[in-house]
Image 1 (cartoon, rainbow, N blue to C red):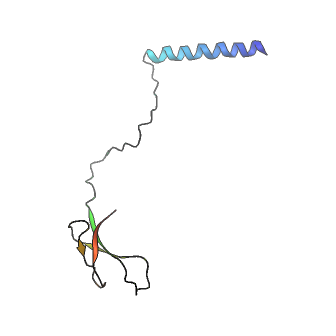
Image 2 (image 1 turned 90 degrees about the vertical axis):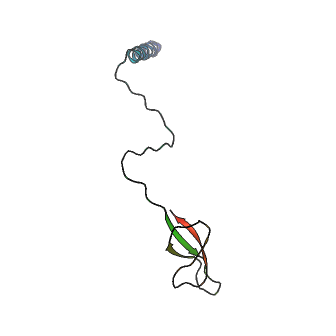
Image 3 (image 1 turned 45 degrees about the vertical axis):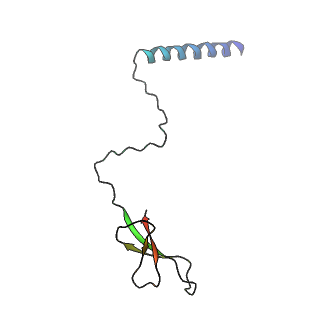
Length: 96
């Protein structure tokens, strides 16, 4: 059993040094490295334009928890806006 293990150890060592020698000689070996969360744009599409929405919180008398949301014209984010057919003012926000 010792002879088999020692032969395997020698074989493993010789294979690893042979592979290292081939790598330095320019053999076709590639190493895959983690590049993090970098995203590159490979196509020529234009980025999506920003879309603005008006977010109006529901009144207390409404039987609703979610706010009313409608499309709005471009403007300053956080500014006041109004939605058609909704009572009250809202604030302008970006749609993601």
